[in-house]
Length: 238
Image (cartoon, rainbow, N blue to C red):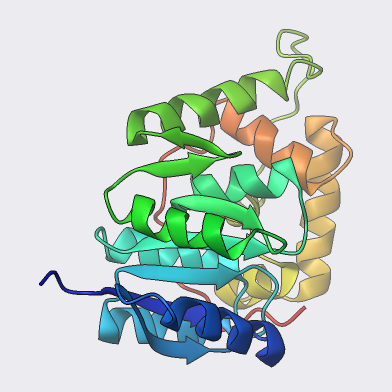
């Protein structure tokens, strides 16, 4: 008999987490090996237990789910992360898949669809917007998403003001989805200083928010699409 699929649940809402466990343990080929309530604990438990699949919430204390996803997917190539979120947000899906997620679902996903997805990602395939993809197709989707969402940026105006070294460091963390608190702790500066750098970055790039800044950096090649070098932060309580 084949070994069951070992699943870890990272979810800070106990009711939803317990509901997931009940749904999953009905299936004879699925077993829940751990439940954790924050991103930092998810990373620690994944490194210790090496589950087959992690069901990852996004908004959690200590470290958000996207950052935890990036660390886990970078360190454990054989572990598939399925991001579960309350928000049907294409931008968040982009950052989840770029962080290394194998699939992205809104929390109103049916039990049957989620269970099917768990079995699918264990075969090395990905699910993006309900579509089954290979790793190469996901990379193409990421590149196309960047292209589509940066058409409004003036690439050839010549008016772009170069960022300082510190602003580039802040931008690298921003692209990874880090909060101001995490950026401040990682760089050893105050949160107010991070806010000041962020204001300058938005002004110099001519964009309106953090997401546009991140996409602009990726589109211009300042931050490699596959760059996952950012070290794990100490905390991310927002």
